[in-house]
Length: 482
Image 1 (cartoon, helix red, strand yellow):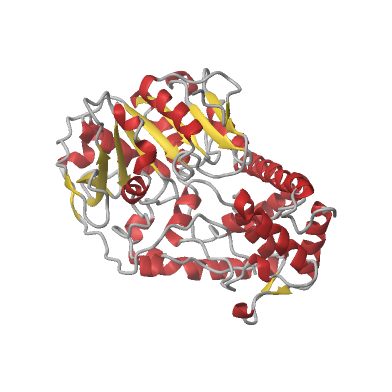
Image 2 (cartoon, rainbow, N blue to C red):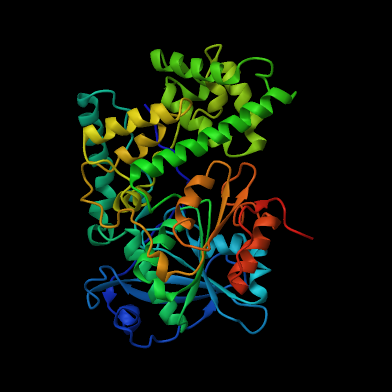
């Protein structure tokens, strides 16, 4: 049994459904071109920094029906220190990350940007803030095995459909309109309500898919767009998966090189890659026992790959990863999951966004072909990513917002930031637009601006979003001049 890895945000325990109401004038302002009523700012609710201001904005559930039912988005603003030269719209990713809470948490990272710009964010439809969906029904998706044949595949699809049903049935109309193109229209409604003719955008992680979707729909309204550690949503799925696997292999090779020279590595002096692959093969033949807290749970090769993926993301976790591999070579998988919790399922509403954005397979043959491709590209992690996108079948209709090229001639130069293992995916987006530059963070770590507050990355991103200036091609971090 394997569970797909996801970036899980903290989920509140008590959830209320967002109310449906008749559409307001602001909801369709961006679609009609009519002036939008200004947002009314006040103190934010909950444990949010007092520096932030919040407002409410009604948008249609279905943008093809602007006079239909609406949901109300919470919009947050960290005002500029002085006279603002414009606004930067920020998405933390997820998908479904609560922008207001994330901006509040990481507010010191935006201090330089706020010398000249208002930083604006929002809690998206279907997000983990719980404002529009019942998290009690939508927090956990299905558990499913890695299918090795058609029978197991059909069993997995049946389990997937049952796991998705509680969330879909709770808010069926909203559930059908969670794709990033629909959310890009929400973004443009925010732009219109801010009174901005053009907007700058900063997308972290899956926020890059929102940015790419906005760029396709509203290229004339983008002043600038910076993306950090984002997935590729411009190439077909097979190509974007290849890039992600290649990046992951590059990250793993960094771990192997560290191990060869570090006294903190329990695998030092032995063939790290061969040992790891042998552990995976052994677990595939006979799943390994874990910590006492895991009870009867056992871990197969795909489980170990997914758990190792999480540990590779931070160099601080590399000693633990080395110890886990060494222990697993002796038949004990507890180092990969010391608390015995197993891997969490995908948050259902987040999964619905992925599926609607085209991260999915349309049938068993497509799934098996993807697994075969991954074996050729990634000897250490093949098959791991395919398990996540398998969950879209059979309940999801054809993806309404599949990957597609950007309208390059209509867009300003873009700025990308990518750590070693995500750099190829970021480049896939930025290379579409002439004059764009991607800064390579020459190390491991997802979300260098938002999550790490890296001064080198922040310096380049802030200068670009304020002045529109991209750094020289080939720029790397850490290399920000004093």
